[in-house]
Length: 330
Image (cartoon, rainbow, N blue to C red; front, side):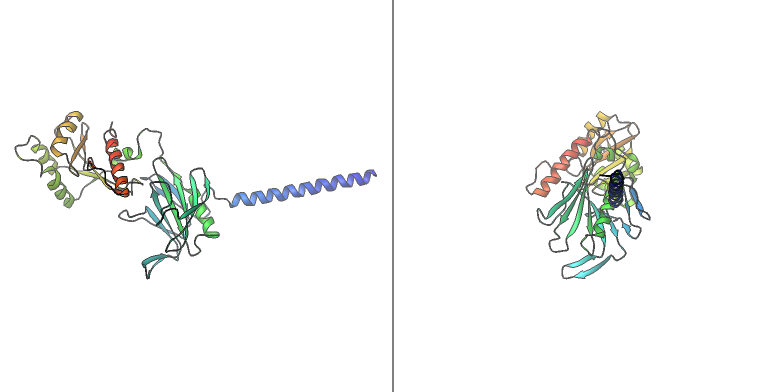
């Protein structure tokens, strides 16, 4: 073969391979930029919850709604077309919206068992197709944390497919857990030992609390009557623990903080006053600091394990938390 034809062949081969390589790079770049990332999408907002320790990005066209009282979810993202409409089944959400809640078993919440199918899983985040049972189908994402899991659900007019599913992936991909600590304390223990979270109770609750706990069990000839009177006139702060500030909590737990009027030391406080106030839903002397006392009405779980599955879960969790209370302040 003449040399000029050999040279032409080599040049054509180089051109052909280079063209294929450039096309591959362009394809790879387009795929890479279309995947969800942890960077905020242009024009999106960032939501942060310092108490629960998480943040995520969401489209600016959505509205974040946090319930006053914790129902079955932590927050809701409502699209511009979101509405509540009547139906034969009652009031129903319509339009585009997302729910963020918790999952104690790290599985999608469904009406019937096994109504979901996993789509994908990457690190601590998994996506699922969920059968809506009597309602529309939707997508779910489970995000694994230290002590529990979060569940994001996507409900749109398209049943969360195509563009809406891409948007859902971007939201979930941006979800980050913050304030994660290597401390050996559990999330529950960190929560109840954070005294900045305790708030002064209202006058109405003060009257109810005092009559239910401090006053009703203390007679004038009791050695702790003066303590009850001091508490009656002084500061009482309360922390309510539920699934709003402790995702995965199956019931409500209440803790109280008062000044240490009698300069109790911890062993004396817990040993002597537990006999005075002990009982289911009664006041439980938990821990004494030099300047403050910690009490709870959640120190007794009832003693007898229930029969139903859901009540068993609540009882077992209560027993676990009751043990964690004893070492939370050490």
